[in-house]
Length: 96
Length: 261
Image (cartoon, rainbow over all chains, first blue to last red; front, side, top):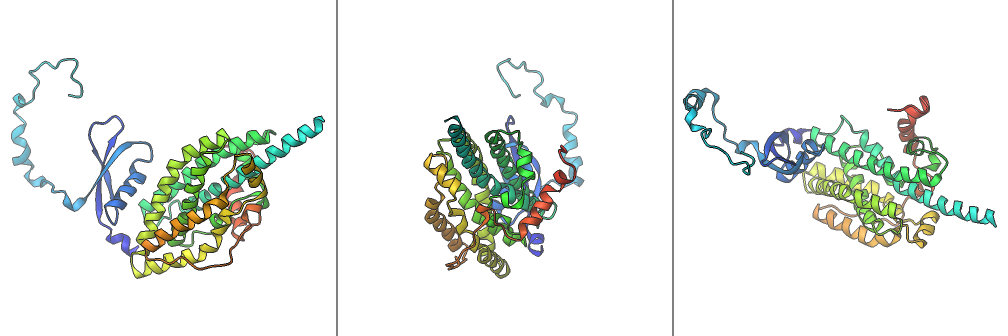
């Protein structure tokens, strides 16, 4: 159990059957990338959820600081013109 | 005349029935052993991995026993076959009934069985019996993953810390005497080999030990040098562990006959 405590944390991204992109599914502990993939397969795809798995060690993710939410995100709130809602999308274009 | 035909028919089916038990009981008992780890795995991730493997094995068992039930032709169901036999009527090898003891034993037992299981299913896929070949084809993907899982762990433990190395080496040493039985050809098996139905397991032996030793070498482990091996399981003579496994496995059906989940 001592060794388990020192296993680093990994973030798991799974692309589901009909999904177009990998989504964050959760996290788990593993000694290295190979083990993280196998663990992710067993923990997150055993109910037939996925067709592809990415794992990345959590420490490699740089997260924004919640304290900076004001300056980062609030300026975008009143800029509706940045949404491309003024275009008509042809029927043949899917997944917009 | 009619009687001889009936007798021949029954005999043929009896060999096939027993051969099915020989295959399926390995998965049944190993699945039961792995199932004991539910909630006890050394970590959440390995716990789920081991019980996933257990469920794969039970799934395979169902296919074999549904087929065996048809062969028996007397109304026996897959549950009857799984739950209601006596100890001597189980034909699994001794290897799969060995206890979990610790994670090293669980992995060593799995590895020693998986490598065999994969070789076996690869051959069973070529069986003239279309039911067996279909079950083999479906199971082989699962077993390929089991083999990958247990092989990786043997390497990790062997080439890991001093403690993990000595633990997995001890487990390999202790379970080694049970490996040779995997290649024993029983009478029902022999009869089915002649019909092109069964796998001649004696032919898998060299390949098996080569594969095992290659992994052990990579894991900095040693293959034990043994001349005497244990056997008996395939003919129903089991180790002292079997009774305990069956009392767990059969408890519900014995206590509440015909109960359903």
